[in-house]
Structure formats: structure tokens, C-alpha cells
Length: 322
Image 1 (cartoon, rainbow, N blue to C red):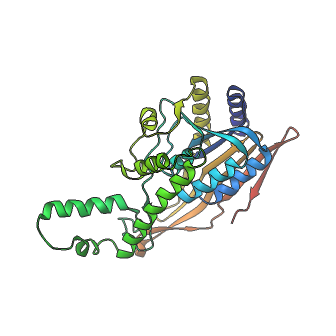
Image 2: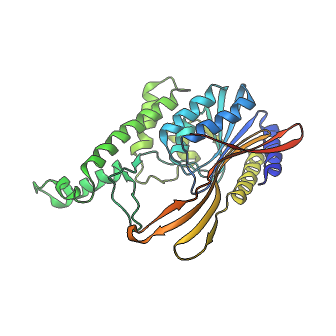
């Protein structure tokens, strides 16, 4: 735990910015999840209301509906929200930036498309017997390629596709795509009053890009209509240092006892404000069930923890979110 060091960086960044800074960091195996809302609430209740809040984000994405809840919570505690992006800010994390009045991006920063992929109970399985995510864009491209190559054939492409993707999955993905566009419009409505402009930005982010992970850099972000500006060099340097400290805290630690037993311990999600940090720590045993060709968890002690400075003393504790 590097709480003392991260607090020093946060204080320095807040002084440069002229306002309070909240940080949100995901390990590559972490994601934007429902319990993040309660974690952020704990930070904001201690921070109080301010004219301007600054939010540092480094995340690979997660749940789009959670992004709407996070932004709504942030906007209840400030008049103006500024998002700072020094590195990766993908998928659902990009959705969070849509709710900000301003996005400040560093030289290595990027956003991504937000087209929805869905991990359904009836989704196909991969080589490890895990359910895979299916996106509407992928399905549409398969259908288009089929029709282009078949020419005048009257054979229904869905008949063959259903052998690999369950029809209920296709219906669910189509519904999720509509939800994604709606979420983007709702987030943009916090600071964009022009419905046509908001719809154009939402449509671009959901359907323009051929890859979900396509990096949207500063110039492209401006081009599609987002209020994006360069991140000042001193702030970018401090946030990269903060990412280095969080990366050290969140490094993966796995102990292999034999071929089918292991123990994993790592920090996946971190929220931090002045004098207070909340983080999710994964602490569990893994067992490989050979007959099912998949890993299952055992003795799971994972959960949210907190560190706070009270009267010059550091206190640690466990937080129970359900």
C-alpha cells in the first residue's frame, strides 16, 4: 500500500489544478462495476460540494449503465466536471468522459468507441470454456459479408449463424446497442443542450469505428464534437506518477501450488480523494475443474477496503458493499 505517496501526488495535482482531484484507476483485470458507485459516494461525502471537480480516469471499461450512475453522482457534487485522461480511457470509461464539461487529454491518452458487446448466458464459449462477448457490429459484418459473397442467393444467412450464436443472444445484443446510444445521449445532456449534436456524437461513437478498441486521440475527439483540450505538462507528469504508484499497488500476485491449485491476490479498482482511499482487493484460491475445463474460485476473501487519514493517524478498514 502506497497511500502516503499517492496522497502527496494528489495534493500537488490539486494545487496545480486549483480544485479537488478524485482518482479512479483500474487494473487491466478490473472494470467499471456497480459497486464503484458506492465507493465513489464514500469519497464524495467526505469531499463535499465544489464548483469544479477534477476526475482522473485510467480504465479499460466495464458497464455502461454504471457510467451513467457515476456521472450523475459526480454532477450532484459540483457545478462543473473536468475529466483528466493521461492514458487509457476505454469503452464505459469513455462514456464517463461524455458527462464532463471538459476532457483534458495527455500525449499518450486515448478514448475508444462505445459500441456494446454482451456476455450473455447463451453466448458461445472459448477454448477455456468461458462465455465470450458478442457485439452487434460483429454480427452485422458477418451478415454483410455473407450477402456480398453469396450474390443473388436467397439462402437466409441467419440459418447458418444460429448454429454458432443463439438467436436470443442476437436479440439481446441489438437491444443493448440501442441502450448504448441512449446512455451516450443522457450523459451528453449534462452539458450539451443541442439534441441533434448529442445524437450525432452518440451515433459516431457507437457505429463509426470498425474496432471497439480503436484509439480516439485528441484531434479525433475534437473532430467528433467533444470539448477536448491538451492536458498541461505538469499535471500529466503528476498523473503518470500516480499511475505508476497504482500499478505497483495493483500488480498481479499469483502463487501456484500445483497444476490445478493456485492463489491470487491483487488490487483491481482504486478510488482516492484527499485523505481517503477505497480499493477492491481480490484475494481468493483458484481450482481448475478438469471435467469442465475451467477455473473456479474457492475461499474468496475479496472485497472493498479503505484507508483514511484522521487527525494525522492512518486508519484501515473493510467496507461491505452488496
